[in-house]
Length: 175
Image 1 (cartoon, rainbow, N blue to C red):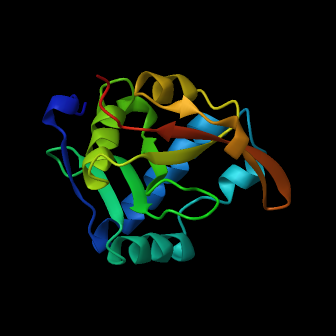
Image 2 (image 1 turned 180 degrees about the vertical axis):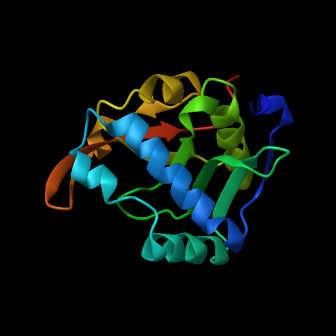
């Protein structure tokens, strides 16, 4: 049995972590979205050379990509984001992915990775999109995220329409 999160360290991802990140992404998708997405869409996320290469590129681009790693070098979670304000999203930061293996959830890893991203954006506001009806909404609210339905959107993934909800993390100090 693996150690609890007190024995898990956060560190910047390295290109050689790409296959492990792709695996965590797939396993977390399978656990989180089984009732929300068609199984063939989830299975298409299985790590293959194309997905691993995409993660390797994201890591090399020097965007924010952190992993949570046990003392046995097992990657249990990751977060990926960037400073990327756009006219559609006026906030400086966007967290693109935050996934924790199911057996490591509810131990503080998601919170630690989200806090690491807050440091990366130096306290600036940031947002994230999540699949509508995702059980992670409660976690994001608990972490200070506010739903901004005016920024919700529908995208087409592998021919399936999916609804995405936006959460904003303002990060302003309350006086």
